[in-house]
Image (spheres, rainbow, N blue to C red):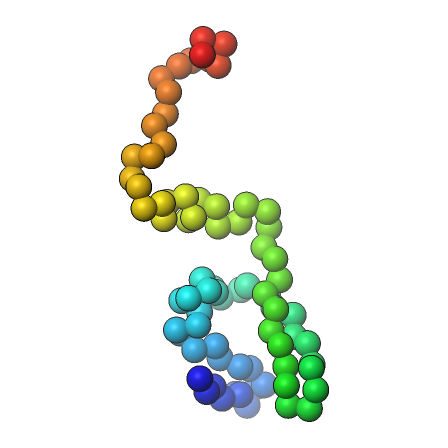
Length: 76
């Protein structure tokens, strides 16, 4: 894939890559220079459990979780 650097020095990640890796605006990356003309982008780890709800909602089996009707865990 190809991309272009803007006049501000910004690099745009193609939409296909952003979708595959769930990259959203505001996410942070580290950049590492490997050598002349070679660089590596590394996504900075998000907060613990960030995206957990999205992951759970993506479960292919709907209705897997069923809440227990109880006012207290003492009755379980």
